[in-house]
Length: 147
Image 1 (cartoon, rainbow, N blue to C red):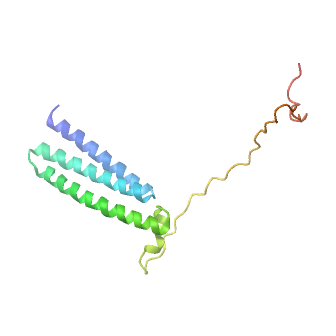
Image 2 (cartoon, helix red, strand yellow):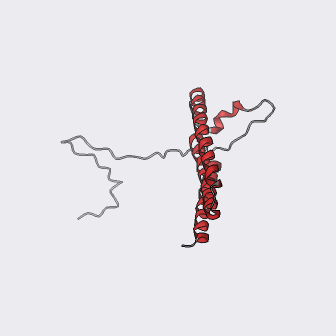
Image 3 (tube, helix red, strand yellow):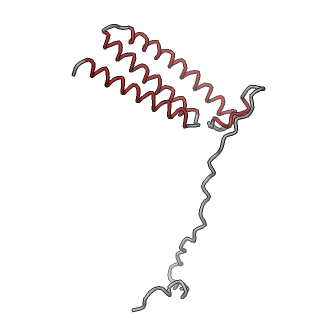
């Protein structure tokens, strides 16, 4: 495989990682999942830096990726501490719950919630106690043919 095709494959994979991370970050409301999606975007960018560095035959991309990994490790420690503190304060990891942390002059964001699914009322069959003949409703079994 030549270098151009290899570069193209790495760039496509890096773009897919970044796009998946961006979609997950924009769609999800759980703070931990959003953090993991941001890390996925960083890994996509790191992969493209490494691919370009290999294609050009220098170490610039690898050195930048080492810096990105160091910053990501610091970010992970700070984000984990922040998420744990906010969870202890509110009891939830839902981002929409933390509206009271906004600045004074900003209006509240109104989030449209998806209505929860209502459980259906079902008539579950009841087993008869052992040794007793069950009571049969003739209207329910009128559709059955007799032998």
